[in-house]
Amino acid sequence: MSPEEHTVPERHPRYESLMLRERVIEQYEKGIVATAGLFAHGRGEAFDYLLGEKTQGQAIEAVEAAAAALLTSEYPVISVNGNAAALCAKEMIELSKMVDAKVEVNLFYRSEERELAIKRLLELHGATEVLGFGDAARIPALTSERRKVDPEGILRGDTVLVALEDGDRTEALTRLGKKVIAIDLNPISRTSKAASITVVDNVIRAVPALISMANKLKSKDREELAEILRNFNNSENLRAVIGSICRYLKSVCEDI
Ligand code: PTJ
Image 1 (cartoon, rainbow, N blue to C red):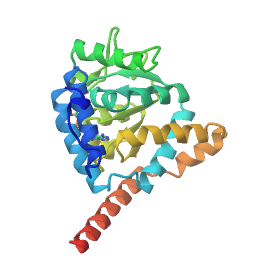
Image 2 (image 1 turned 90 degrees about the vertical axis):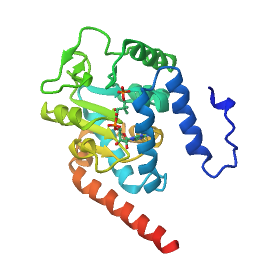
Image 3 (image 1 turned 45 degrees about the vertical axis):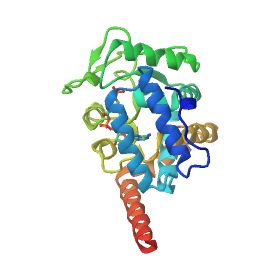
Image 4 (image 1 turned 30 degrees about the vertical axis):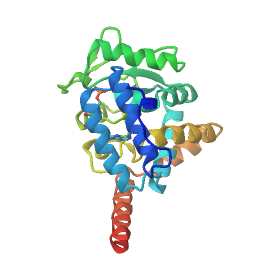
């Protein structure tokens, strides 16, 4: 069922959130999003609620560090799954072109049909090369389907951007010495804690913010970008996010 067939009134106070939900349902019906992706989206919605559904200052700091990491990497790779494709395929491709990153389809609930559907969607939005379709390499010590990676993509990458990811792979990629940039609304997930840089924000806001930031930083020299990276501390940033959620909840409590 397409969003137009639904009747979410434009003046509904939760219009944007409901329309986003419709987009995920529509892409589920088209075979892009896994069934579990619907639940994952719901969990994200709950955390987004706690962030006031706005990009917080800590996320902007993380976006700056993430853009600096992508711009200084030798071989950046963007990993795309079903939910990320459903919510920001166009922006993921725009980002990949801006920072000269490879794009790889890598799924937890792997099926050939979904992989191809996601590839087609990415190509529709301008992707010229989508990795993840030849002979796969394996990430050691990982049992999920996400262990299968492209030798010319995630396996080779020095920086890997992942969105709506599971903790196991983030930990495994970090162990392999890769810099992992995660976009995850849950600041206490294993992914958030294991990543080198975690942007605690909704992908629909985080990826456009990354594009703008990369555009702003791309004229800076490597030393300035390296300085931005040195000044970023992921654990401190996550603690600050949790602190602002606590303050937000306290202010809500006072208003009740
Ligand atoms: O497409 P596949 O087969 O690779 O499967 C993708 C899902 C998302 C189903 C799979 O990776 C999964 O089960 O993920 P989890 O373990 O549910 O983790 C998803 C994380 O993403 C959770 O911490 C959510 O809070 C977070 N999340 C959900 N929606 C968003 C989000 N983070 C950023 N933006 C969102 N819109």
